[in-house]
Image 1 (cartoon, one colour):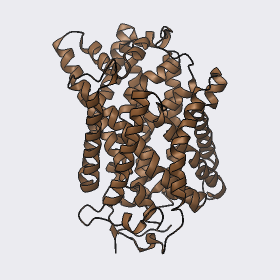
Image 2: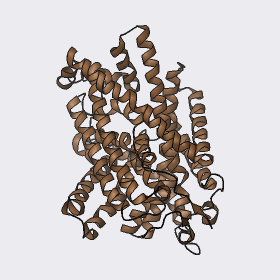
Image 3: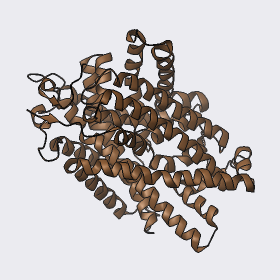
Image 4: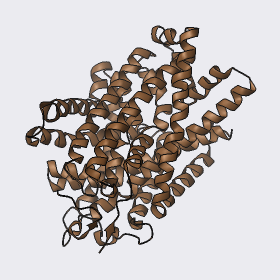
Length: 482
């Protein structure tokens, strides 16, 4: 009899939400948002606010579901309950083979670029990304999987510690940068002076793409639902973690963005790209001073820690992907993938399965970045695709939450439907087509579909339940009604 222990509390769950969301996205999507709003801080903040509100409203709806459903892999359970087992299985297969692996692969690469900046080695030359960048990315991914597969408690403690560490530099720029900007006029200039429209700004700027870029920066909160069955008193803990975590994130992001634009111009946010926060620290502490160099290096270190915390949280979900299917006796060899290690209380086979697909998508990311033959926004497309499945949950809530008040039953689900639909339409390219008449986003979406469609087809061969329902044989250390 397998025993899935409830080993995580409120702070760990909240740390998964905050720690997985706050990370590289805040740093390497800042220039994308600014670029797609033509360098306007006001429009950029609106984009960040809309993206954040979509996250908060969606997380709140999921918290209502979490107080009613407590199984193995939250979001898959919610979609399965509100639609049917085939759709629920398809989403679970998508998480296991596309969503988690893509994000882990890209976060491994992004973490490496900041790490290379920290140790001051070149990231690229005229021929593209240096070969050792890809090797380091692979090594970081390997280490992250080893920790989550064989030492989940260590991974949980690492998540909490990195969450605390990553908040320090963010609030430093948010608070100190804004204060300096108020006295120097930088804050006022940020709100009133847009970036000069040069060729560093995209040809076809799209507000929809700006919001979509924030979706990556805000993504990760849903991973907390993947440890639903491992949370103590999950029906109370998970809703609290989702609400507290998402509110912390949106506050931190808006304050950080204002602070960033208060010390460096909107144009420089675009031109400096991923290194914009490092240059901002230089402005705060003084250019060409010893203190500035130390401060920039220290801040760069915190960025690396932030990225690694996000990578750890994503890997946590990735390791549980195919296990969530196997526990329902679905997917390939469910008895094999549902077996838990006595020492780590994790499915080693499920972790290795996630690792294989992560390496696969790291190779595809290489083709996208180095060769330009695949879309360079696979991360955003992977995220937006999940929001289409959430629509089943929101519609079900309006039909079935009869004992809830009007806000819980209608207002929040309707807002979540509107927000999710906007992200999906932005990812497909409809919003960009309406705004600019450009078909590039649609073509990128079609390329993405061509990549994942064969994987989906293979997954359909394993959709049927094989034997008895393994889920009914699992012992939990808490008793709950479903």
